[in-house]
Image (cartoon, rainbow, N blue to C red; front, side, top):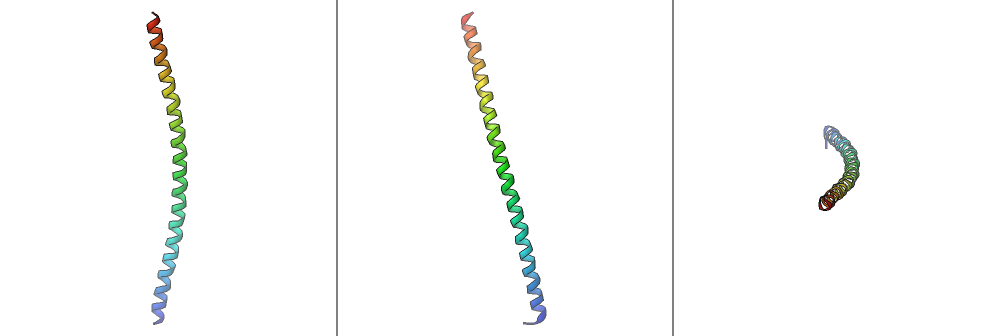
Length: 69
């Protein structure tokens, strides 16, 4: 192999190493973001359940008041 071939190979290897590091960092960030979104989803689902229960309780109360009159 010529020296220019080694230089080209070295450049390609350096590029691949840098790309691998970049993708590893990006993957880590995406996993953290996913974890954050999952936590937010869980909180929103809990709030939705609380709101649904309150609305159902109000409907029941209105029905009982309607039957009392």
